[in-house]
Image (cartoon, rainbow, N blue to C red):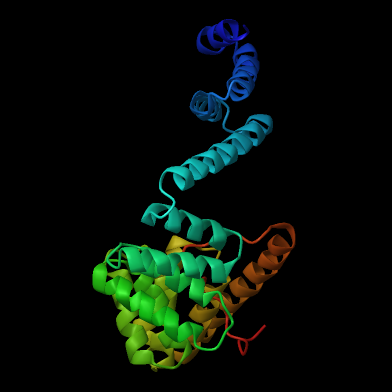
Length: 280
């Protein structure tokens, strides 16, 4: 009975406060009537109109999560053995940190559709998260398979490069980092990774432009600033080295404070971190 008035108030009211209140109640009414798709439409419109409203963001997030759950349940009901259901289950398990279950589902997807784009990358990333012996070697094989299917997958090339870099296979690492950067130079982590390889190979002059590119992309990254100080040290530029070190110390202090307040975020690729032997 409330729907006509709420719909009119939400769609036509010129008063922002009344429009906001009507939208919230309309979203609630649609949810109560199990008209989930209409409730999602209202939530999308509310977040567009009031992008910084905490109450709207809260209710919208709950609605999206419930809608996603119901949609996944329907997928399970209509196509329980499909490649889509297995991949959705794998992504759910991965997000929950249940890596073994995620790996099982991703391998089921590979068995059903070996040429499926992106699945070898997801499987490799999940394998990387395990601490079991041999997981890195397994992950590397998956990233290489992904690149065979899609040579333009910069994320897969980057992860393969990082594995090679950390194992000291610098020529392979350089090759894969360069592959990761082929689609474009705006891949910050790949720029840093390639610079680190070039520094280790004794080529600081070649590493410098990659670090400068990374810093242009993100001036707040302490890793790139530290590596920049190492390049300047190798090039004999003491003043520039001290300036980069000072910026590194400032950024690292700010980072420590932020990490105390923020939860870890999910990333698409492995983040560049300082080696344990790096100067504090």
